Image 1: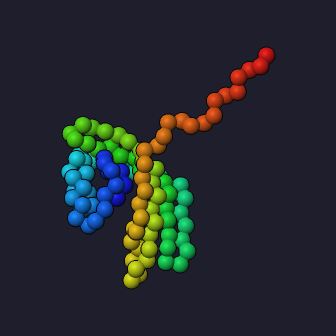
Image 2: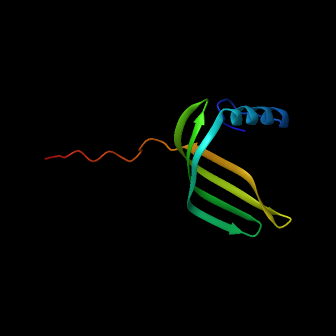
Length: 103
């Protein structure tokens, strides 16, 4: 597991421990939405790309945030299961600056 308020974690016990710790910091979710940007499927693999918008409390403080997320799914025994998730906070505007006037 990468991120989650710390360095990379490996091993079932360590990933379980840190996942529970991260989950314990969240409470009082008041809204959630998912905006689908792209999706595709090929055989038993599929993906979705979109934006998750959340209003929740983190460590008791009301917080609103948007994550860019990608999910990869695999069909197992007729059911779709998430086998990979990546989410990150949207960066600040990275568009190039307007060209300076030369007149």
